[in-house]
Length: 463
Image 1 (cartoon, rainbow, N blue to C red):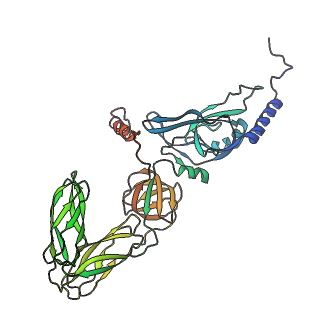
Image 2: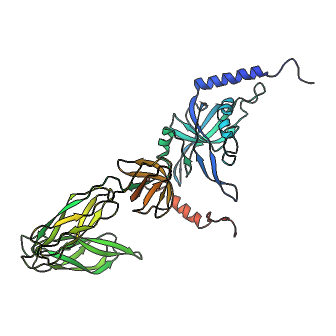
Image 3: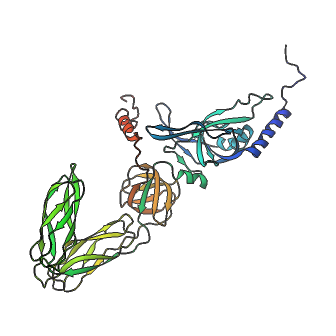
């Protein structure tokens, strides 16, 4: 028997009333979340897997939190990849609000980027402001409640905490950007600043000093740089010379590369003996030459009076010639990670000085212009390495980048694709947490790479 024609089983007016009541309740009791649709950038050609995606749009949407006693899901789990947080969140949003407010914008986008625009999609993101966390939509339930008065009115979004890989998330919302700045693998690049200062130094001279050092045997088996020890001067009022050993590793064997003088000492009549203490290696041997004429003076110490600023490369150190004109002293500078001169080493103390010579340190190059933009692509001029900007701190010339494709080379210029900002790399440092003894990421990845090579067009076959 057919249904009673005098009862409509839900008229348009009744359905309209229910929808408006739901919209009103969501606006009163809901939370304003940010809906971030996923755009496909590139698909894997073999099994149509999404290789890369971007999230660069955002829509404010009211949602009701179905969780009443905290996040659901498995919670915190200890795995071989460290502590995994499996929090889940269930949200209810208005079907009408989504179709009227968000769907029209998604309809205008490329079909290859947005495959479904009529409803929320699995893979889209939700920024939950109460916990300042980003969740990924895992399932969209569109039939609960089940056809009240002959129609559905809401979407229930089953969400899991988002696990960031290398997606580009650029919503222009500062609150979301602040969360993403601390997410993923981040490299700190210390850049050469536009503001530079030339370093300055003074020299001290003495008699009976170590003039130069000759490395006779570089030894081997060192695990760290050994301490260089000189015998005491022959004159009791003299100063013992000091030096440092610079090591190098060739074919997994670490040996001494050179010995640089930090103080040439004074009061030596006979060449002092040189010994090496510590470092774990053996076999190194060195001798030195001295100036025995008590009337001949050489450069025995170099003191930094101004460390300078903005050095991207090691500057040349020049010492003025002696008045007598016997031999000019030579030296070398060391630049630290902050772009300042941290040490001056004497290579040859020279001779014939009747007064302290003038020490000139090369000027720092004026490198760097502009301000990097958040999430823009930057490219290295030499290595061709690309990355995306997380944060640019102009006061310390620190550029934080992620999504790195390659390895930046010290000294190369990094240019922003949109901003045009360009600075030279002074040093790069991985800004990662301390090693976790529970993690086995590298071991698993190494073993996986030996099995499958996804750089091939077909890692499962021979073509």
